[in-house]
Length: 74
Image (cartoon, rainbow, N blue to C red):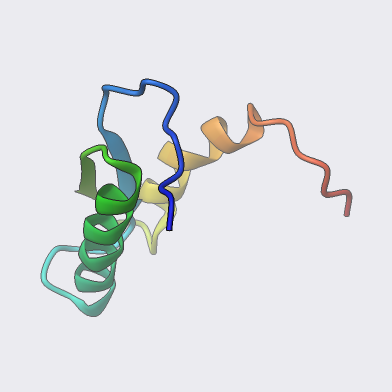
C-alpha cells in the first residue's frame, strides 16, 4: 500500500488533546499520533491543553479550522 505524500512537510504536526495527560483521551491521542506519524512520515506531537471543560484546547484549534475552506453547509 502506498503512503500519502505530505508535500515536503518538514515541520511536526500538532495534535491538540483538550484533556490532561495520563487519561484515556491522552492515551488514544498518543496512539493516533504514532500511527498518523508512521503513515505520513512526519513527527506528530501530542499537545495536552486541559482546562475549562475542553474550552482551552478548543480555542486553540477553532481559529485554524475556520481558516480551512470546506464544502459543508449547515
